[in-house]
Length: 119
Image 1 (cartoon, one colour):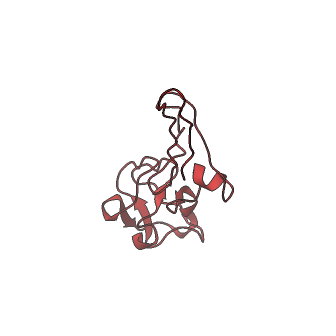
Image 2: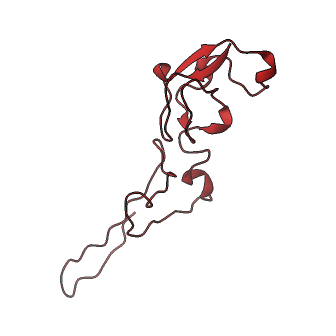
């Protein structure tokens, strides 16, 4: 048996039992990377759409905080910043559950007061 999706899985979906099932398939249709049991995918994040009945390929999944997501593209000790954009292009599908984000804010405290950076 091989692991297939029970429904269409959108990017960002954290896989659990309801998303996965097994199916018998001809040996010629599978390769060494094909998942054989659903437990191999549980808790992983869908990086690209997987359609109902489609084989669940580990190359299309990410661990929380890594994989084909924005978090995987940023060097250690670096940050990514988005600047005022609409909600569609602001994260462009890169931000997924499990990623860590920094929230930055500039606040005006009135005249004569000095701005301070807090970490």
